[in-house]
Image 1 (cartoon, rainbow, N blue to C red):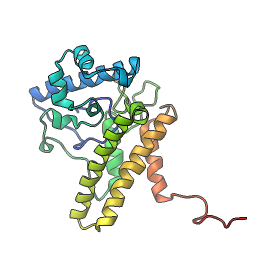
Image 2 (image 1 turned 45 degrees about the vertical axis):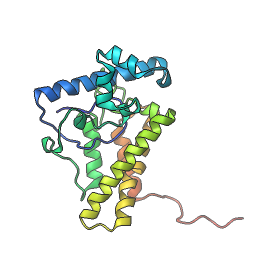
Image 3 (image 1 turned 180 degrees about the vertical axis):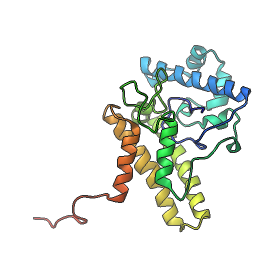
Length: 231
């Protein structure tokens, strides 16, 4: 099973196992190398201190190749890596089931974690990352700390929500409900879980945070439904 490149915090457009040609596998390896190199440079020097040209040089590619795959530096956090290497959705066994969004979200997290159900990689760090690459959520600190990255990821999230809402509407869901459901699962559960996972120091698997977020949808409040009167 191929994995998305490490570094961005988002949900891939076409999650699932893939069957790639040799050329696509080589391209995916290049995308992975560029992203891992970029994250290492950001960790060492800070996001704003690293240029695209420096990333490309360290990764052994030309700036033109970087821009072809990612478009901008922020694209490291938002790019659909399968689309970037020329893999269409027909190559993927989709995991998205609009009739089971909670299950879909858990399957996507397991896929991003490398097929281990979001339970980590056995290295004791609890991040679901495969040893040596930092995992699919390695760049979450920059999403939280860098306004340009956060804006790009939020824009990508908006587009993701629009696609999901359209899918739900096409299956008969009322438009307002479709939009609210889509944004609740993306920004509320998935992104909120990632934020808390990072703020807690990445000591537990992401999947645990996602399941806690899903549980909140089933019973969001333990206290009273309305605020008590003043005094």
